[in-house]
Image 1 (cartoon, rainbow, N blue to C red):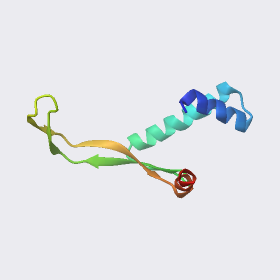
Image 2: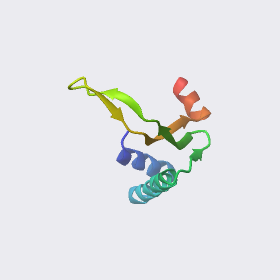
Image 3: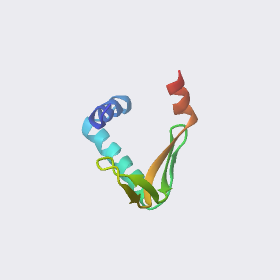
Image 4: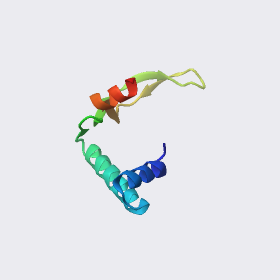
Length: 91
């Protein structure tokens, strides 16, 4: 499912217009993005938690040449699945 399909499904379930559902979806995604970019975690009970994870610097290998290289430390977004979502996927 892509974003337009998700917005259409939200519109149908919430009895909203597709444009309004798309606005709501965009607002939600903007807020999650803003919070995580500030270093906060976002917990949606039953769904999961978005958080910032730190990757330490490490040694790697250039796949084209095979030469060793240094990979710098970085931050990434992690997602921990909530129980309700996990149970839904298991069934």
